[in-house]
Length: 123
Image (cartoon, rainbow, N blue to C red):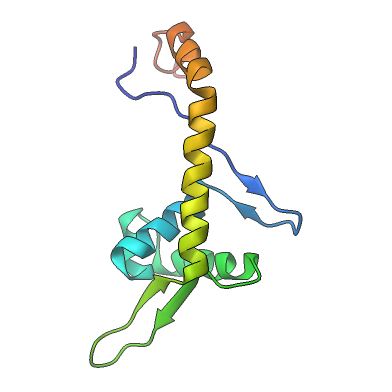
């Protein structure tokens, strides 16, 4: 069996047509950790422009912004999660944990039944 456990990835499609998935949630988490959109994007191999565009999209998804920025200067600039952004991150992480708990038995069964062939499309 593979050393990497199987994983399920979910995405939330909102009624307004926008999507909240693992990439945006990870960006929120990393902005919270790094205090910078640039550093958060770099941590996942994303260009600053792409990270900034995703941050802007996240801010437009809801009635309140999730990410705020501080302009540079003597103490430097940066970014941080607003109280709404912190609540959004906490709720999405809680939803992820709940989903994983609900499907854990099925995921274990799938892993047990998986072929030992790492990539059936490589031949």
